[in-house]
Length: 391
Ligand SMILES: *Cc1c(COP(=O)(O)O)cnc(C)c1O
Image (tube, rainbow, N blue to C red; front, side, top):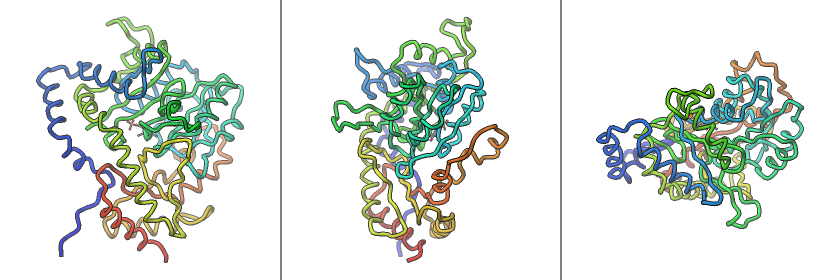
């Protein structure tokens, strides 16, 4: 019997095989040039990404590269000049980095619930959480689908709040509520600042760490650039307290090769998601991802909800054990909400009304999702999932 090929949660090696020559050339060019820090590859990539995001001469989108997506979030809040005690409304159903930077800057995270369909921050909960100390809203475009940016921007405008979009999982996703494609806006370009990550497994991933901020505001762009460079725009003159956060030239060169493929990569993920949807369509214990018709979805993750609202984690944990035993990788994003993490236990914060978040942490499971998935691989994965659930 021929042994089945191993399955991967993310297949970076398989993807590299298609672009090997270009990547190798770009990396060698940086090494031979010796321009490892702030070399021409960094400038070229940031300009290309700005164009890719829809920047024009009349409406520029500034891209400020940095060392990772967590630093991008930190730089964003530093650039906005928030003060200790200022409140930032954000979901608890997210990766730790989102809320960690708020806390690190001694701002006050106010974690609110998410929509049970999209997994994204619930605008009604945002509105209800606003206090005189609220200064910003930090939506996360979770798993690759835009949060309700129409409602969030409306709330922000009415209350004079900043919006920072955590776009680490959603680069290339478009918020387009009118259905008129000319008026769609890229995730990360609607709020005051958008942040993203080029962590290898992200939709636009480097071969190491990387990140960026996006903004349409030229003055904020200048502050972000300074903050990522020790608060300096002229060598040995430091006007602000900043950080040391750069995108390596080698990473920029690799990302520059991958950027022209990003539309295709995101489309491959959607194709794979469509196949999974069909494979699980009739299963009584599986809810496939809800797709908000107002947003495109770039499927950073393909996440199932198991069982019914209020169920404990037993079904999910049994499936996880089965998948482990048959060698099918999976992820649980996220098994514990931020407001229940030990690091946040001593904080003075309200944790009521996070029922959807807590319920989802018991019932979600994410399946392999990447650009190299074939129908055959997905059929194997789906068979294993079905076998791991009660029939
Ligand atoms: C990956 C991720 C980050 C952090 O990015 P790093 O580059 O790993 O620092 C932040 N927020 C979300 C939602 C993420 O998925």
